[in-house]
Length: 250
Ligand SMILES: [Zn+2]
Image (cartoon, rainbow, N blue to C red; front, side, top):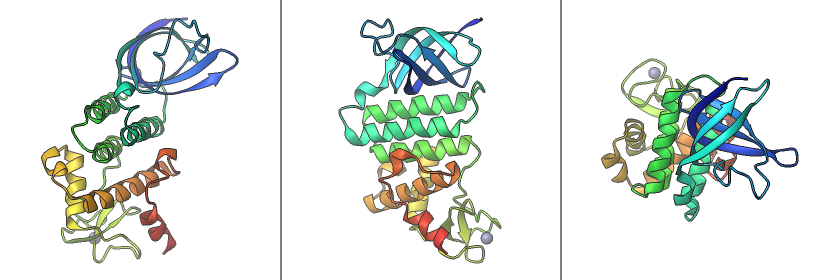
């Protein structure tokens, strides 16, 4: 068995047997890993509350035959503390962790940009500087872009024409009048500008946006993300799905 160290964000945990837990972590160097924390559910566990979702931890692990074994865990930063008291921020954070876990499918394949995006997203979310759904949509758009699924926002996703009319999830973003599939959503120009600002990290423009454009943006981004993940994210059930449903129904 070989020993290694890495730091990462705990994405989720689940029970294993009587006292153990399997902990899924997005690490800086190793990518997504699943490790066993032994005895973690006993009250006197040496890991304490460190291996909880949202926590940025420094880990030492043994490489195991199937799952690695976590032998040490130290807290670097408990991002969850800033989120638990605020329901919109907590649900946004939960959706970020679920999205990271599902977008990064392979284990032990380095995913440094995804790690940095998640750390940055959780830090911004906890700071309270921007509305939670804007932070969440920025995270979704950027993590999709890193995964290779950035939506086209300026020129038609199919023919590159610059006079765009609609947003078609199946086509990969905005589309012109001739490429527009029936049923594609026709968002306001300001909504598309908000999506572009969130993708670029232009917070001055994003913070100045109006509520109705934020609503439309969240609906489109959630529908676009779900399409790419192929099946729904539990935390997003409350977000409107009408865009995808409308497209698929036609
Ligand atoms: Zn076109």
